[in-house]
Every structure is written in structure tokens, then in C-alpha cells.
Amino acid sequence: MPGGLNAASKRQGRKIRRSLSILICFVLLLSGGKLLLKQADLNLADYKPLIELVNINLLGRVNTEAALLNGKQDKDWNLILVNHWNYIPDDYQMVLVRLANGESVDARIYPDLLAMFNAARAHGVDPVVVSGYRSPEEQKSLMMKKINEYQTQGYSAVEAQALAEKWVALPGTSEHQLGMAVDINPARDQAKADQLYEWLNHNSYKYGFILRYPAEKTEITGTIYEPWHYRYVGKEAAAEIYARGLCLEEYLEELAASKSSYN
Ligand SMILES: [Zn+2]
Image (cartoon, rainbow, N blue to C red; front, side, top):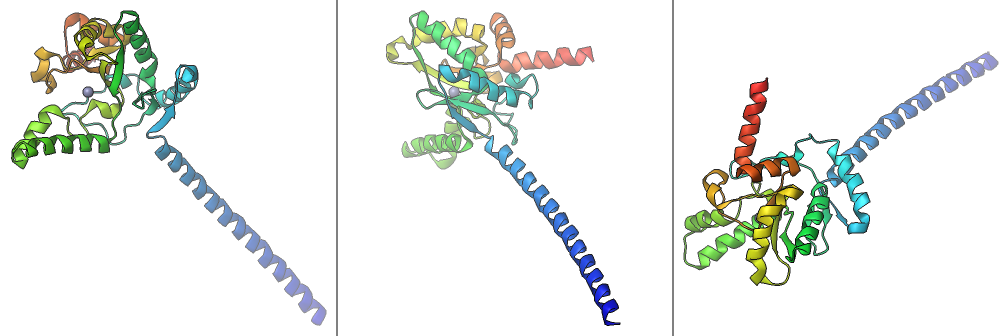
């Protein structure tokens, strides 16, 4: 019967269309999911490092971003140990803020850094951050520059490398790659360097910073005395490190020992 055949083929057509639309929905759902996943990956990658141009007026905004990241990291974020023997983790992330002179630091240390600099200025010393955050590439090129310097002085490649490592941290072992270390110089008058370093040495702890490489601790820190290099560790740790004349390695070792004796 032609009519019956027609109705049957119409029914089949509807069936195929329905199956097709279900299939299309399914494909859309799948690709939609994939798209979302891609976007999430992209955001995560973009976050490292996110550099924001800031000044004091924008501090509120910086704090919001830093707080976002804080939630992802443990409370001891400022006690991370990076030295000759301890590399920065590959997945380390931070939010950076750019200072007026183009240097960058971890956004979380910015308010205390600013307070310290303001206090220093009030005491007649005018500090400037000459080196803050360094990317792995920047650290690598610093090392290459130093090696070249020694080679042009006539040292062999091996000797030049060994000498350079006394002055420049191997890429991956520099605190500058954390964004929590700053090299501080007098802003204008180099003759005021001693006065500045004296003030920083005895006051930086109030703002959570420590003289990271004291002259009498080079064996433990693995780094020569650097009066200009300050590291943020937070006010509590900085106060104890200063009061007891420790270096960060000693402080962290004691902290770990006291924690394990509680367990
Ligand atoms: Zn430094």
C-alpha cells in the first residue's frame, strides 16, 4: 500500500532526525566541555606570572589578587627555603606587582615593603629596589654574563663557572625567582650605603624582612655576605631570626624539629 509505505518512511525519517539531533546535542556537550577545560588551563597558565602595574592607590586591587592566590597556597608561603641545595618547585606560582622603577615583587610582600621604605625615608635613608623578581631566563643570563666576565679575564670555562657561582645563584636556586627577595641600594647617594644597610639590618624585621646572608653564616647559607639582599619571611619569623641572630636555614631547622617533637 503506497499510503502505508509513505507513513512508515515518514516515521523512519522522524526517528533518524531525532537520533541526529540527540547526536548533535551529545557532540556539542562534549566539545563544550572540552572548551571549558581549555579555558581553565589557559587561565592557570596566564596566572604565572601576572604582572600588574600598581601604585599606592591601587593597593586594594593588588591585595584582592594576592588573596586569591593565598587561598591556593599554604600559610607558610613566606617561609619557603630556596638556596644552593633547595630548588624552587616547578609549579611555583605568584602574583607580581611592578614597582614604579620597573622592578617587580610578589604582591603579598608589597604592603610591608612599602611600609619599610617609608620608615627608612623618615629616618633619612632613601632606599630603592635595584633587583626584585627575576624570571628563570633573567637569572640564566646573569649567570652567563658573570661567566663571560671571568673568561675575558683569562679564566678557563670550568674556573669561570666556579667563580661565577660564588656571586650568582644557579637558575632555580635564586630567591629572586620567588619575588620575595629584594636587593636594596641607596636611591641617589651611594655614599649613604653604610647608613642604609645599618638601618635595614636593625629595623627590617619590624616589616617582616631579614638580612638573608649575614657575614657569619656563609657556611650555612652557602652565599657570601650580601648587605643589600633582604628576604621577606613575615613579621613573626623575622623578629625571632633578628632577636636570636639566626639565619633562615637555622630558623627553619629549629621549626621543623619543634614541629616533629609535638607529633
Ligand atoms: Zn639579591
